[in-house]
Image (cartoon, rainbow, N blue to C red; front, side, top):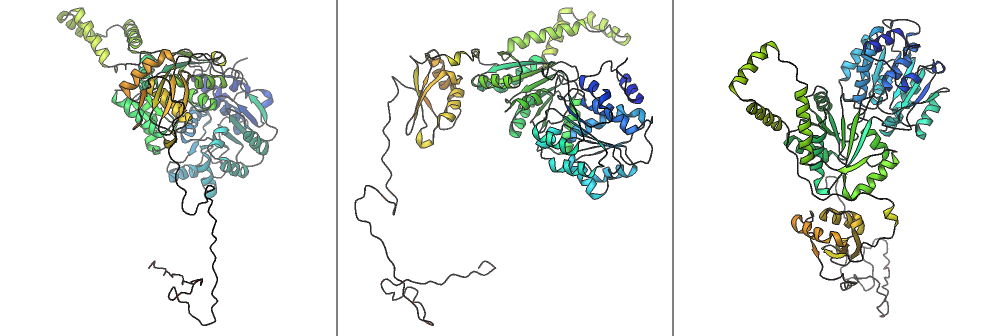
Length: 600
């Protein structure tokens, strides 16, 4: 019994030529006898081999016992993906997987020339790969005939619903033949996916890929703790320390992507940026630069990186912490794919290490916490790499041997070694200096015990108070960032009219004062100074503002006078005086001002 049992021979040959010796759990599951010819609802993580899985699953249905596709027939399969990049990636995989069947493929994705897509559809295609919006456009315009479909595949179905494609999906599935096979592949199966499956699938066989209880086994997680001001320097040092062939750095916003990509480019890294403000041509150029090695670092937002599969992606850096466990798993899943090993580094400021620990716990992941690498660690790693490269140098070719002899005759080995060392060092950007202080280890149990650290704490004053709408929830991050401390090292915060007083743990007070004096607070118009003695018990409030005219004042005991008006009746035909010779108590009627349409 081989791994190619129950598989179409043409696809088995393609997998064997590709070097496949084993199948992933999800690929094995879709070939089980009980799944043959039926609908499937499959939950499998990104990078588990889903594309090949649904390719080998639908092949028997499409070919129906034949070895090759018939010419001139209508499309028999429709693959729907959430993003342009993922759709193009699926088509690229299907080109080699179905090469032996003579299948003709066409793609219909947003951002591409619709006229070229229409011509490709007119020439005939057996398998269509596209995004929901563009596929619906072609169906509505009559350029795509789906009356002969035998199989429909929804890849990353949960992402398509998250991106707002539910209406388009329902339109496409309702227009497809009722007797088709429907395969849904999703990382998770939330209620909306279950509802979609119940409506458009018939007795779907549920498959959960084995090993999902332990997610991302091939990814090594690192928690790099840094001072808030050292965040960007820590990212640069992480790139130098791990020296990955291909790296993706995730930021929270477009502006953060633009800023970090510019910073890395100025430091000598081959970097590209991916964000929603780029055109499709710019996105394609950036991804192609990563694939062919012209760029080694890609800085991206979560949305822009959806569906991207970059080869040899060995390192993922979270420049900004993800907001939820699903985002963490999605970002990290860009590496460690199809059996490859990968590293995921989370850049965590000291005051947010508790949030990072909770995030990892919710995602059921474990990470080793450590300080961000500094120049000493990076120099040591570079030395190891350079010596390892020398050990792997092949023997000189015939045309090189003569030059080697000539160089050795002209220069000493020490001179040549020094020249080589300087060349190696010049090719690598220098490391950044980081703060010397290491963060204390996070201890969840310690937070539950009584805290006696602030019995001798030092008090400081910050120049914002009630008049500036100061609140502890936004003051605390500012105070932590200004003095390079964590929230556990800040005690009581007392807010007065024009300033606020706060307490710093005793053993950090001197460092806090020194750091603020050297670097300031980082906020314009906000100053921090050390208080001599304890804090003020309560600063006097300013005088109360006088009541506005006409506003009721409960302290005013004068009798309240009520104004009364008497209407002066007009006889028919009388003209109002418009304020002239107005009798006392008479109500004045003023004509409404009329405006012409021209605005005059």
